[in-house]
Amino acid sequence: MRVGIVQGADHWHQHDHDDEFFYVVEGRFIIDLEGRSVELAPRQGFVVPRGVVHRTRAPERTIVLMVETAGIVPTGT
Image 1 (cartoon, rainbow, N blue to C red):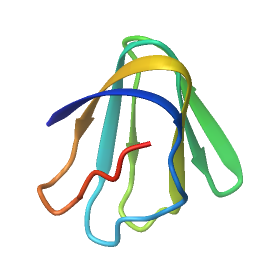
Image 2 (tube, helix red, strand yellow; image 1 turned 30 degrees about the horizontal axis):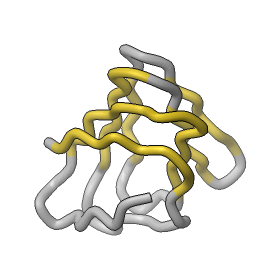
Image 3 (cartoon, rainbow, N blue to C red; image 1 turned 135 degrees about the vertical axis):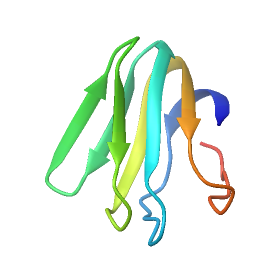
Image 4 (cartoon, one colour; image 1 turned 120 degrees about the vertical axis):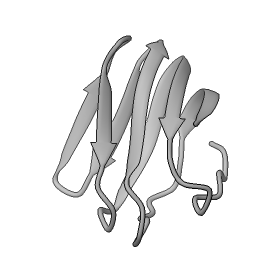
């Protein structure tokens, strides 16, 4: 589990072997998927299944908990 304070957009990517869970503590967090976007408010979470191409965006300063395996290397936004 990691805590991130993020703002801005990450690059499009996928994780072939790992799911990724995001839980918003404060702010607004958007997960873009192919064909749709999911917007999360505080106390909302979302799982990006393995193999799904996605990117994350935070239009404002956002605190998010990320649950992922040690194999996922954070690149920052």
